[in-house]
Amino acid sequence: MVDTPRRVRLLNDAHSTAGKMTRRELFKLHNIAEATGYRILKSKEARRSERIHNRGRKAVLAPHERDAIETVENASFRFGTATHLTNASALGLAKGSERAIQRNMAEHGVGTYMAQQKKFIAKASIEKRGIWAFERRYWLLPQFKNYRFSDECHFACGLQRQARIHRRRGKKARNMPQKIQFRFKRRNQIWHVFAYIGWDFKSQLHFYTGSGIGGRLIQADYLTFLEDIIAPTWQEEWILLEDNDNAHGTRGKGDNKLKQAKQRLGIKWEANCPESPDLNPIETIWRLVKQRLKSRGLILDPTELRRAIEDEWDKITLKEINEAIASMPDRVTCVLERDGLPIPY
Image (cartoon, rainbow, N blue to C red; front, side):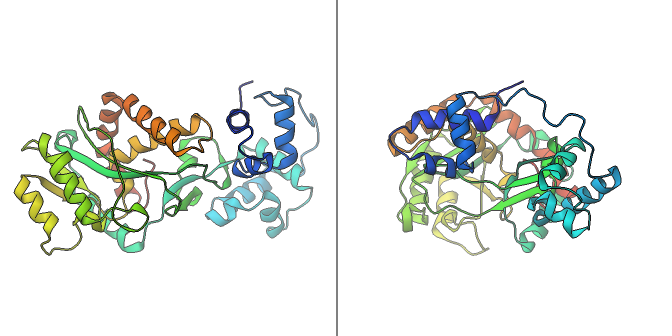
């Protein structure tokens, strides 16, 4: 028996938010029913019961019926997030209770887990991703080592709710396109940071408040980044990889003040494929930072959140950065295999 992550997070957050948040709000953030939440807090145990339930009970679904339900749930994200009972009813296989069908599917190897989340990608961007990968199909790691991968990251207090979806165990099932939950930008971001990485290189973390709406970055702000943060340590052989945010001045073929500034400062640059955070290794590093922040428990104070962000960025090692960059040839191959759809990076 091992500690279950949901129980650990709930117990840690209940301790850190005592007197700051009601139990009902805490359970809602963790997507846990009140009765279940109070039972976990009362037990003070991070483990499930070791008792074996319903041993020897006759199955309500035959193996071929379980296969049919799994096939439906693998067909699309909508079916994958519906209850087993709903899908069984649509197939005319609802022979038992929801709990009995769920137990049968679990015995069949199909559990219910938090869905993998990826940014939604438009059809036009999917086509451009396929072209990008085709042009780089013969690239090896040395061709990616001269790149400096840059991006901004945004942090907010509180937790983000994820859907629960039916699937089998393992990385392959988790990253199936039909099992991915597409997400959109959050509006309650508190801290905005900028950094860039490369092979055996990690820049300092730069906190900023942009001049745009809600502290968003605009071109005048990014010009300051180029002059004060990037240019002083820039080397001639490096190539700056940027995304297609309008603040970076990378959209379109026309000239603008940011393109002129990069030329004046001797900064070679390339624009990343549109809507493609999975093709930028720094996104892998940002995800590591956010995962480690989440393991600290619920953070409600902005000042405390900033200190935690700085601490986790300092803990990022060059080995972790190099491993993220070393995966670029595999990412190219994966984009080709998926015809431009999101990849598990």
